Image (cartoon, rainbow, N blue to C red; front, top):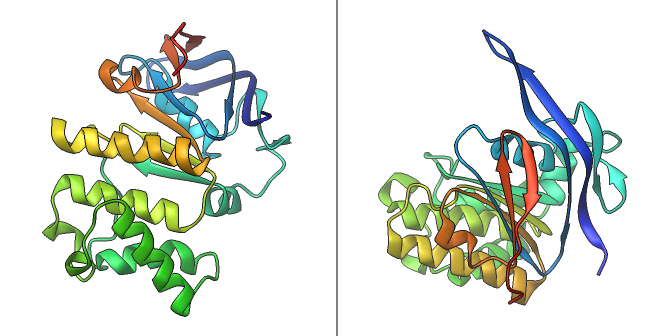
Length: 228
């Protein structure tokens, strides 16, 4: 299968108060639809910077990132995140003054999907991740952390994005909720054909993925794993 995302000789640096930090150093990797990937590494290893590059939030200083053969330097990156690559954050990034349903509808409104179709799709995706109908009108602060993360996933799914980029999606969750969120993300890859990429420091979560990349001091390497 052709890769939906490719990282080719990518480097990225940034300047802090004291020095230039070489966050990503000549990284090469590729990602396919229907598979789940983990990028693991200690804090400061460069893994979140790589996720920002994959999401088009930053552009490489060297090399290129290709989405379906097109460089992120040559595409509308706002449209890319809206239509193709959804980012799920550790802190959920839900709108606290919008209801659960309104949070999910928001992502579709950006794509001009409205009315009955939008509501039906939002309801389908919320139920699929374990949010019940009686929770649709609640506000995010009224939900548990695990429930808020599931709403964030439903929002990404309802928009129809093929690439799901999850930055420490279980970082604020207990073990039970973590397991449920990982199950949902694996199902998206294996049953719905999405490309799922998880940034995590949790080795147990990484071990459940199809492929693991490790980052250390900006250097990316593929780990040898048993094929699932």
